[in-house]
Image (cartoon, rainbow, N blue to C red; front, top):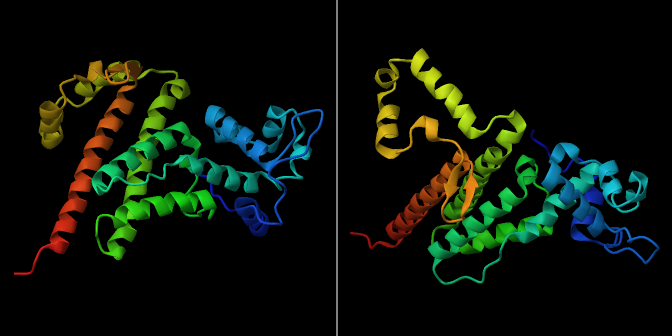
Length: 278
């Protein structure tokens, strides 16, 4: 499900995002129950989205989590559309803003790993389309951090601009696969192991000439993957010491390898730019 942000009242959303004078107070006053505030409402909404997904998010659900009615929230947040904008921006405050080690490759590797963890922690963020940016302060701060790290490569600003999008898309894509892998068993009622066991034998049956029809895929499979299809169920991540779905494990390995090659390309582009003319 793709969700487009920025569908609420533009003025009220921007006031809430940037906490201008026209915005409701971030902190509520004292009372017999925990005071309502924009921050409290956003935190409750994020908790619902994190644990139950975007489909469960509503003003009523947020109100119930806070022990209030949905109507009580409207003093602080005009509606669900504006709330979505603010909660999306709020969680982006979790993205790191490293001081920088002086080694752009080390810094970008650390940033990418932290960003991957961020998206996996808040998988609903991946459903918010990039076609309508929220334009909030934390979203801009995250962008500013990555641009600063990329300027450390010494590449032309036009290249830095495109690499910014490339890295965000790369990390979001990897995180989406991890998030899907974690959700698949619960959503389908079938574990990875059961899914592969059901289909691996059938694939050999319906396509006995598979290797002839798809020689390069078959070669890659035989040369790069030691596990047979039937073993591609839940495996153990020896680093984390816990079981992870096969697809998540593969997505994380792909992320590490792909990021390394991407950074190799950035290094090569930088070396080409600074090489003396012959």
